[in-house]
Length: 248
Length: 314
Image 1 (cartoon, rainbow over the protein chains, first blue to last red):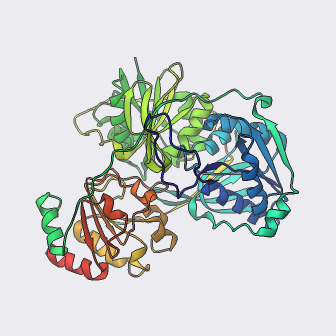
Image 2 (image 1 turned 135 degrees about the horizontal axis):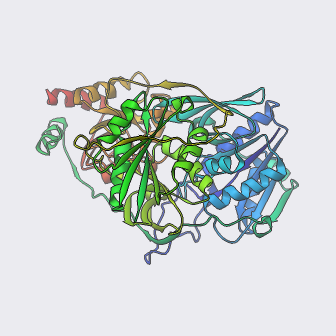
Image 3 (image 1 turned 120 degrees about the horizontal axis):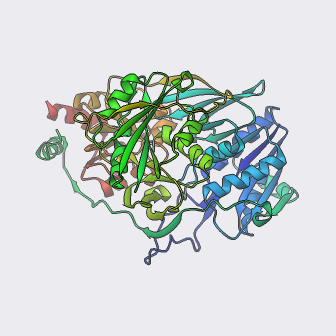
């Protein structure tokens, strides 16, 4: 089985996001970029399935500008067999990303596609579900456990009510939640090894994908700030303050 | 004029309060009509409940055995079919709506607006990105059906009781896939209030120290009649199950009172409590970022302060 993994580059989760004063975007110049944490989890899961002998090949896919190569090399250093770089200068919205992935799925015929449940930049949480719809295949979103056997995946999902288990026939799309696994660290020799692994570059324009970028972002604003309150000296003062506000 | 279809969320034969919140967001579009779609194996009681929600014009039901459990692959084609004639399709941005709606949007070939915080026009909305550290205004394509999920913490539940909307059974000729099967739900069900709709929430973090120690949080919550929440660190450490996680990737909540105990206040956690009425922080580290957003802060050892707090409550 071949596994396709979405591998997006985002502003590192430790960066304090600043909105530009003119409201045209957030500051990204000189800001540290990293793999979307959920995508690292997706890649780790794919690698573990390969290590268990349940998959032969793990392919990471990235959509972005020319310098995305360095990011994809990280995915290769982590252990992916090869990478596909869908090259475009523009940021794409989830529906476009899903359409691109669908094209790659048609060509690559993976048994499983693993994506992060959301990217921590746009927080959209859409691409996996959209790909599954376009591909007309099952989806198992927000996965915290994946078991593969007999052409099926049994997936435990983190839902609001608790842990839901579903069974999906393969091929299928799985999206990862935080507790699926803990991604491995990249070791230096692996970085060297990754240099010889192949990265196929495909121009997005050559895929014949209709743009799904239907949302126009017209303004960025900083969120309203909560003001710092008061410090109380002990439990009794706290209870008195909450009583006064009618909260107790 | 806008016509909005709201997808009802339910569990164990009861409507989730998130449905009435989605109706509030729909009402903000000032539409000609709001219909609620109930997909279930048995729709009777659910439809009756939905019909009482203020602002609802009609309740549409699709009763099929396949709809017994909320499987996106099964529900999405039905929702996409039912969406014909509507300008907007809304669902709550809970794990239910997040799972189903993008699949609906893709079937309709349209974009989805995730986590609608406010309605600025029929096709203009505000939503959070970067864990709520930026708020964007987005315009949806005016010729497309607007598919959106509603950030429930931003919207009050529409009142319920006085309305009595007509209920109509819908027959949708849609073939449903058999490739996805429901196996089971392991639910941390308790008699405590539901975390997503509770007026008071007591949350514990890494500072609580262990699964056993977390009893002190449960006890305080019970005394206050509060729901229990947790930070990601506490869930990762195995102190409590994942459905208690509050934050960017967990639950976004808006209780009147939120008590963060032994929680340092990472950005990802704060994004889940931004809309809380009053935030109380108890932490031994006076420099913890949680104090920057807390209305009332108390520095000290939680194992000493909570018993004192309980005493002061008596």
